[in-house]
Image (cartoon, rainbow, N blue to C red):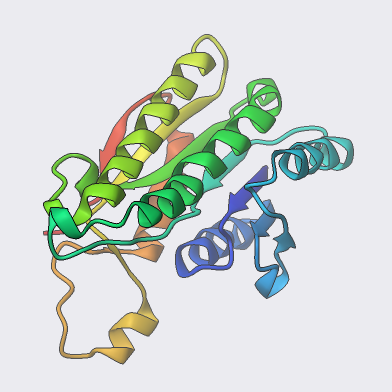
Length: 213
């Protein structure tokens, strides 16, 4: 399979890249930083994203999976202290990049024999707190966009689904704070496994809760 991972340089992205590469799939990691051998593409540049889709189509002829892991977080102590500059940042990271990727890659994903698209959302989208107003709203918007994308994929062999976490944890975080229990957090390797499992189901437009209690 040909798998595109957006946000591939982060801990979650690395886990997903590792999961699919270890299974022998072709993984195309994309990250604005260009770190860790990823393709340096600014996903806020729609023309650059469309060029990426064209280049992948020219080289591989198809895309079988897109995992959108571009993220970020900003918050405040109270609702009144919410900075709208944080909203601007989160909108770009969580919503605009998602829009560009799905619009550019829709034809390729539809053409796949078993295409899969996934984003990672947060419990904050369901029940945002006052300090998470901007973040929760951006996550909710990204979910709505993904569900609309899922509707566009109906009748094809492709699906789009949402994986929901409270937060993510990786080995480096555990080593840095060995006394912490990280209750409810989802390990990035478990996330990668759940994404891999999307190829075992035809479910489309679903929210899979990976919260670990």
